[in-house]
Amino acid sequence: MPAETNDKLSELDTPCLLLDRDRMASNISKLKEKLRGLGVVLRPHMKTAKSQEVAKVLLEGTNGSITVSTLKEAEEFANAGITDMIYAVGISPQKLPRINRLRSSGVDLKIILDSKEQASALAKYVSETGDAIPALIELDADGNRSGVKPHDKETLLTIAETLRDGRARLEGVLTHAGASYDVEDEAAIIAAAEQERKAVVDAATTLREAGFECPIVSVGSTPTAHYAQDLTGVTEVRAGVFVFFDLVMAGLGVCTTDDIAISVLTTVIGHQKEKGWVIVDAGWTAMSRDRGTARQKVDQGYGLVCDSGGNVIDDLIMVSANQEHGIIALRGEVKDLSGDFPVGTMLRILPNHACATAAQHQEYHVIENGRYTVVWPRFNGW
Image (cartoon, one colour):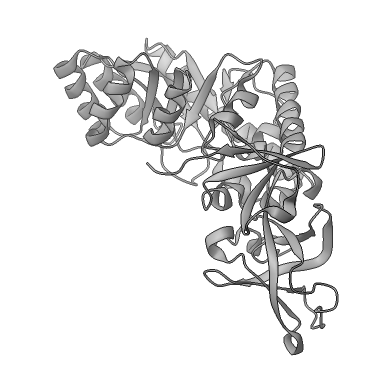
């Protein structure tokens, strides 16, 4: 259960992870409204949040379906009473018994695969256990990751036939427009969203024309979810980082820094005046090593610095990170900042990648209406 606390950030041990509940709720509401207008349901990806408390907010007013990236997530959310899940990482045969245990407990856990080898292993397991574990065929919409090429009809049908012959259940098709994270403007994200939509719809058509049912047609990435103009033929959207947003999403124009709902609270512990450095107690163990903005127009280093109230300090970034030490400086300028940020000053760092930074922490220190109110547990592991 969440632990009640007080509203004083100054009493927190640093570094620690802050979550602005108001920003999070606004982010969730905006995407839900967008998808309602396009006539599709949201199946949120829980890999960013990994929190039962966040899930409660996310699933309010939805059909209660989620996406997970680890079986640890599936087990944790099953304990919270969530039963409709897609495990959206290609299946390995060794994990099938663990999936079977979850399904035996009443969880409708679906898996994904993209090869005949995986389909054959699943069919063999189904024949041994009698549990027709439902599977979706993963598609490679943009050359970014794994999956069957959408127009590779031979492979699509071979997988579908292998599942059918082994009495496994084909549940649909799924893709993720990962390349949308690397584009430079709104028009390119819109194009990526249409490419993503067309990939799954075309593959579903191929399967249906061959006599296979394809009830789920699933797409998902935070950029394309926000910029999709048409989702005809799609049944659901999976997105995850939109719950918190981060500097990569801000760099793409998907959000602003005012939408970013998580930050790392840190304390100034020293200075290197001649170098213009402010030393803080949040290193890469608090922020992660993710440098996702390095390939964008504005490189935010290891994170953008805010005051303790969450207000961005222009051009002040974490330029370097050791294990437990972070180095803060002005972007492209050497200036003694010791008078502005004396030892003991508390600052917040906005993350490059919300998933990676959150993964460094075991709990969220939740802020509502600008006040620190409660601790929400989060979990890691596989």
